[in-house]
Image (tube, rainbow, N blue to C red):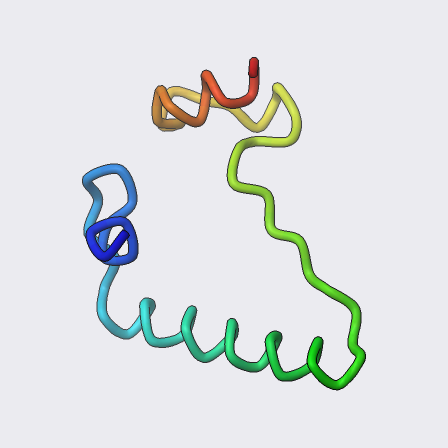
Length: 65
């Protein structure tokens, strides 16, 4: 999972972006602990038109699944 946090299908994620993601997750976790609504972030494209030539194969296949 560590490698998945540092890169997205072989594309490195800059450290500052990783930190922003962790900070946002911490804020959301605290909000939910205080009764706030959960936030859902889809991992695979939700609509067929969101898939293009740059979409990794695994995500393209995940849409079909």
